[in-house]
Length: 298
Image 1 (cartoon, rainbow, N blue to C red):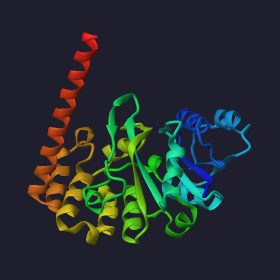
Image 2 (tube, helix red, strand yellow; image 1 turned 90 degrees about the vertical axis):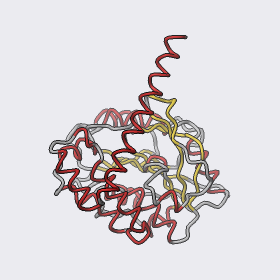
Image 3 (tube, rainbow, N blue to C red; image 1 turned 120 degrees about the horizontal axis):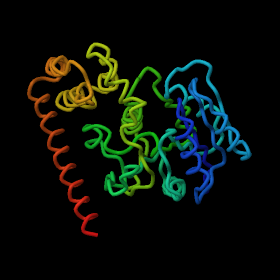
C-alpha cells in the first residue's frame, strides 16, 4: 500500500530558518502531497517565504491571528491536512533527502506512528540514535531519548483522534509518545540519523526558560504530572529535577532553582542530576578536544 504525506510545519518569528526547512522538504526523494505552514502570529514578515514557495501548487500558508503555542498550531495543521500520513517539522530543523522515504517505508511495514534519529546541525559528527526498531517504554521513562517533533510522523486519523495537548507548554513530543504507547499503537523507531536538529536555539525555548523564576517554571512539570503513574516515583523525581535544572548555567538565582529541585525531587535525585550533567559536559569537552586535534593533524 502506498501512503500520501502531508507535511505540517509550525513557525514563529523564524522566516530565515523556515526557508532552509522548506528547501529540505522540497528536495525530498519522496515528495509530499502537500506542505502546510502554520504561522503562530509571528511579528516578523514572511513575505520572502510566501513569494519563494507559493509557486508550488501543494504549498499552503496559514497565519493565526492570536499566538496560542506550537501545539495549537500543529492541531490546526492536522485539521487542514488531507494526506494519509502527517509528518511534523519545526521551522529551524532540516530533513535529509531520504527522510520521507524512510518514514513511508515504516508505514508500509505496519507502523501507526514513527520517530527517527538525527544529527546536530553544524556538528554533524554528533549523532543521536536509539538502536531498537520500536519505541521502548523503559527508555521513555528516562525522558525523550528519541527525537523532537521534526523526527515524528503519524497517521492522519490517529492525529485527529489523539491531538496535541494544548495545555502543555513543553514536553508535547514525549507526551504524545507516551499516550500512543499506552494506547497500544505501533510506534516505530528508525534507528538512523535522517534529519538535522538545531540545538539550543536561544531565541526560542532556552531563552524563555532561562528568564523564568522557579515559581513560573512549575508549568513545565505538567507533562510529568500528567504521566506520573507511567513514570513511577523514581523516574518522576528524575524528570522533575531535569525540568527545573535545565539551562541552569544561564539562570539567575541558581540557589533558588536548586532548592526548588530539592523540595520537589529530593536531595539525592538533585545531586545525581547535577553530577550526570557535569560528567556529560566533561565527556563532550574531551570529544571536542579530540576532534580539534584530529583536524590539526590533518
